Amino acid sequence: MRALSLEYHDVVDGSDFDSSGFAGAGPASYKLTRADFNRHLDAIAGVVTRPPSRAVDWLTETRSARPLFLTFDDGGLGASVCIAESLERRGWRGHFLVTAQRIGSPTFLSAAQIRELHAAGHVIGTHSYSHPTRMGACSAGQILDEWRRSTGILADILGAPVVVGSVPGGYYKRPVAEAAALVGLRLLFTSAPTTKCWMVDGCRVAGRYTLRRWSPASAAAALAAGHLGPRASQWLLFNSLNLARTIAGDQYTRVRERFWAARVS
Image 1: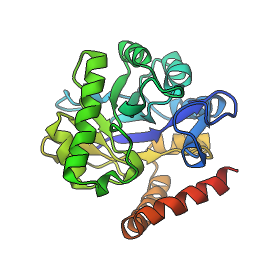
Image 2: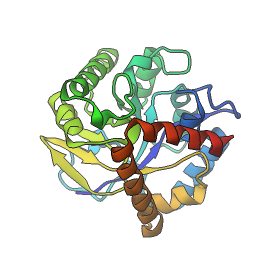
Image 3: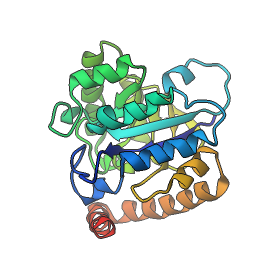
Image 4: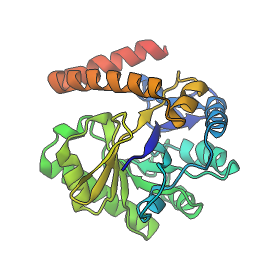
């Protein structure tokens, strides 16, 4: 079982990267301008033979080709004012993974906007309740509470169960998926750069390839086409950083934030 998933975060108009989603240099490193995002989508459209898939459809299929998923973490305003329009113009749909605690905050989606995205055919999922930086390092009780509170809030907004989620902070451990399965999630996206999917207590766990502010459209196209080179590069970098994250803990997070501040300044 394999799936090819691209991990985006946010898209903004102009150059005010704090206008949507989480503020700061670290989050800004994951945000694209609308113009760059449209170039990414054009490049992806040039290499795929069929539209990106929706996870909720894939979960019910018994046999299918490897799907391509477009995912967007955090739940910033850009999902409604930029991303959805660009996707829908191509007849595509995305996965918007929402940080439930932030719903209705000034730079995040409102409940009404979440319902509009859902009604338009986009997949709404959870990105946890409070967005812990190192979710895999949280206690079992904390992890379960993050998934339970967030899926409950989103289910009340949508009037439907929430079955898709993504891990915040990129720090995945098996207990994160075990708790996700307990609250009814059937697909959990991680940030591990792989097409392999595996099962944890009835929940499929899938990796993703990350696009950043400086990623060229050609990189998005190469990843969407499944080219081995860029996939292998992300795998090597991710595993190196994951080892550092495990050893250094919170100190790693502080160093990373300083690095992104220097990179985007």
